[in-house]
Image 1 (spheres, one colour):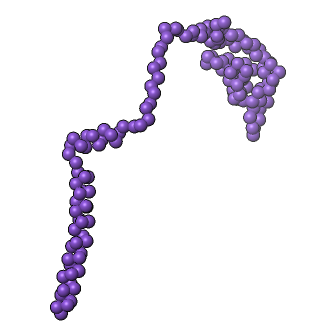
Image 2 (cartoon, one colour):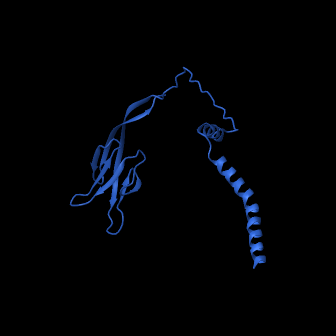
Image 3 (spheres, helix red, strand yellow):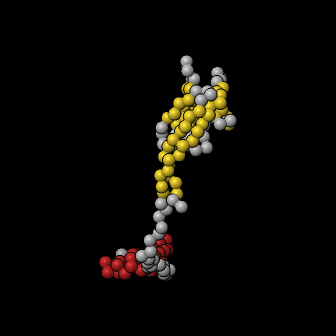
Length: 153
């Protein structure tokens, strides 16, 4: 047994000799992880520095004023002749205005809106761009007048 005991002591000493330097270097590394507040400030300052220098461009506002486009309100009067109306049970209704066919709910070229109103008296409602409503029946001519803004040139 003395040989086994000597072998165990030898292995224990060898293990201590191998582990001791590793333990010391681990302690040294751990010490470098924890620094003083002054060192921490230096590390943080260096961490957030960038090697890239951003160029800032200074924009100076000139005292020049930009020209503002002036709008002028103009009264527009358009004449619409209702030539005919076609009513459908299974689809949209159609209206002939100034010899052009329009589907119920469509917009005219001046952005006026058409609506066929059915019932005992069939009428066409034309809503002008300013919201005014005009009513007419087939065969009638109406004048639609509204105010719009146009460029002053």
